[in-house]
Length: 252
Image (spheres, rainbow, N blue to C red):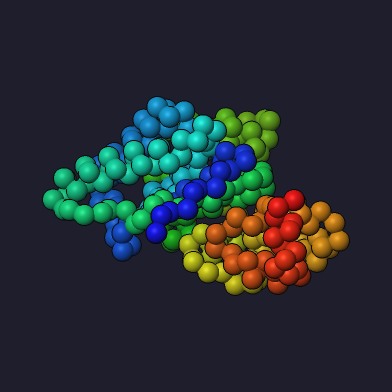
């Protein structure tokens, strides 16, 4: 069966995840990690994409990418194919290294963007590896001290026009310990109605989902209909609409 076309983000922002096949490790040593980051830096420059956050874990990678030239597929194909070839040669292995095509989630507003930045940089802490500031293979310290790969000035501008206050706010946002609703939305294939409701609240920036039915519902449906881990049946239940209403609003 042919793959469905990737949905283009209106803002150009994507949360990209790549995983090792069968959950196998894709990094064995620090040389592997440095090689991956070198490829990320090289190809993002070649293809004029911007990187705003990243985190390399043992068997998966998170990257926040801004792509306004429809180069996301080419970027990830180049990085993963070159890296896999070098990895296989180094470790005398054959076969696929990465699981299927990379996964991407569109980011359509600033509130969601900030949540993804926090989620990516907190990954080592959430995995109980170490504190975010102690981890060598994420964008956290680039954003604090100076960047090699990420667009540091842009990221800090999301927090404040004053760089000093922006750094402090970024630190605060990363270190505050609460349960990220994105955990289930990104890592699991299915999410509960409660988690789906919380995710919608993040995306549409409201805690008043029952009130949405009264106005502006078409805009809300447009924002949420592309969420891959949320079933349409869940959306129907949460918003209190039926299938025909959903598809009518999706086309408006």
